[in-house]
Length: 89
Image (cartoon, helix red, strand yellow):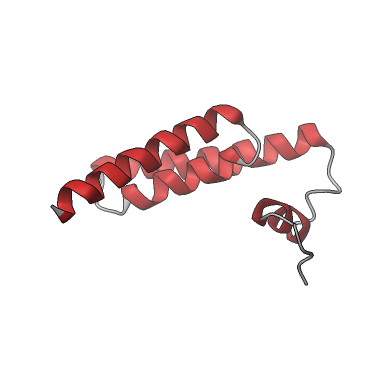
């Protein structure tokens, strides 16, 4: 059950019981999982696969704990929106 005002990230952290983990350990866990997904996405750039979907997913995971990933994710969203606008013309 979700509480009013609870963000998506907070719900995910509660579901994964990551609020019970010390902040440093939580950052390491997020870095390993997000970094792995991001590296898989980068590999999919040259391999057949949906790199356009996997790279932002890795950045979204990393953005839950790291400011630099939030900035990259914002830039990636802007590039995707720009590409969608060009395609729709």
